[in-house]
Image (cartoon, rainbow, N blue to C red; front, side, top):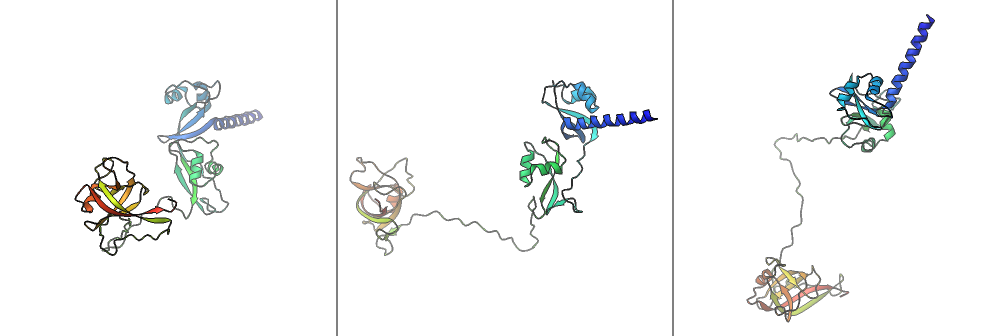
Length: 301
């Protein structure tokens, strides 16, 4: 009778030891068609036969499941089982009766996606990695795609935005349009208009008014958009808006300086070069004509 008890105790100890070894050697589990698959990291001198004995699975089943891949140290091998895949038992973080809440946080689940790690998931839910492992009874950091993890989120914060439905009937929903500033348009003025002049107080706002009188010429250049009012000037910085007035027609136009011009036969003795659009706005009859121009220069110039 005593011998039977001794044998029974010895068998129990060996069974517990084998079970503990299995848990230590296993680096994780994953779900395969509703069945639990154990992930095992190959140690030195391990074979398919040794794995079969360790996990009580036939070596042929393990080989077939892993496409008879040759074994190498550190390699992860999948051990198929007939046991159904079930979530691990929940761990209570709080001593209160409500086991799904902790410090105002609520327990929910997260399905592991490709390239996700314990660190990225913990950061996403503002948790510590150690807390995440403890909540899910994880002994390693190994994760598998499709694995379900328990996570804690703030009770008052929803992870998915609620869709607000318009319950009112017969009243159209008011949609606020985004107000955009219209692009500035070229303004044409008659030089006899009392508001046609650009009044720039001298040395105010860091600029000084410049007035010039001389010859303007319009050109067709592939680098200039002939449909827009552009100008080339020797002194005015790029981006300066110049008011050009044709005293013969009393018409004015504002042109944007886009660069400087070089001296050649076309631009000889001129004070400004403009596009065809600006010339047409001024009512010029010739390619070269007399103009008055006004613009502002920074004080340091």
